[in-house]
Amino acid sequence: MANPKKPPYPFVLDALAPLDPEVRRMFSGFAIYSGNLLILMLRDHATSVRDNGLWLVLSEATPPNDPTLRRDFPSLRRIELLGNKIHHWLLIPSDSPTFESESLHACDLLLRHDPRLGRIPKSRR
Image (cartoon, rainbow, N blue to C red; front, side, top):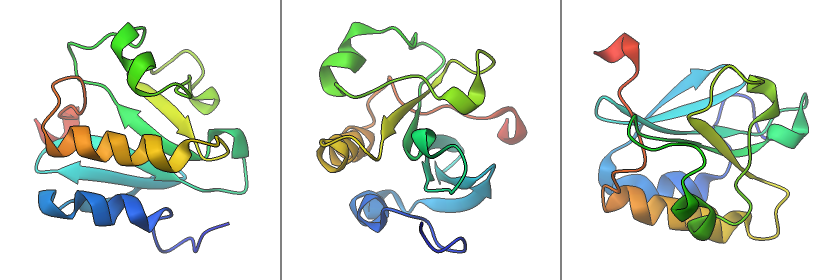
């Protein structure tokens, strides 16, 4: 498991560096913000290891079943820890053979301000 004080998957933060991302502890991972926009969370935790990886935060206008998301991220799936309570977060699992390439693709889309990704949480409105 990763160092609990440092975000896992440092290549993600390196790729997002042009956005000057803000990293904050959240739940059992690290929330990544670009300005007021929550864009993703990185998780590598000993409990619920099936939910380790990159949690993508979808925009308010993007439904979780958007077929373009599946094309861009073939391993994308629901986050079991969230049950059926939060639908606008989806997981690129760290145990996927394409985890790194899909994560870097997500970073590329975020750098291009893809309208499907990121939302302003209630606490920042």
